[in-house]
Image: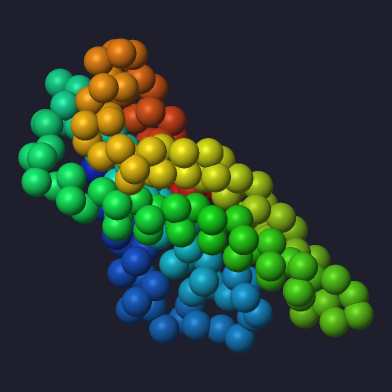
Length: 169
């Protein structure tokens, strides 16, 4: 719970920075722009934290979430899926469009950074399974999973929290 809370605070600060810090605005193409990078990592991280809290609730540390919040699952999961896809597709498109000669608008460092963002974003594609399953089956599905495999809650929460903290690096 403490880790999820710290990650959430850090990621909300990232969104605040993207909104208020005028120095982030630059003319770099696509995901090479600092504002795009900060916004993308903050949204990606928030998606993992939301899934971590949603799938970890009721484990004895995090309180069980009220069932009326189940109505948020489809929309929130769709936003999570979008964040995870864009976490890979954004830097890949930027690298493809701007990282190759003759029109290479990216420096070697920026091209390397795009490759790193793609690599960091790939685990997020695995989280799409969690988000899609929760969107499709709702809270009742997750309860059935936890009854059948009691350790699954801890496993999902741990991997999602690692994903949320890894994006900070």
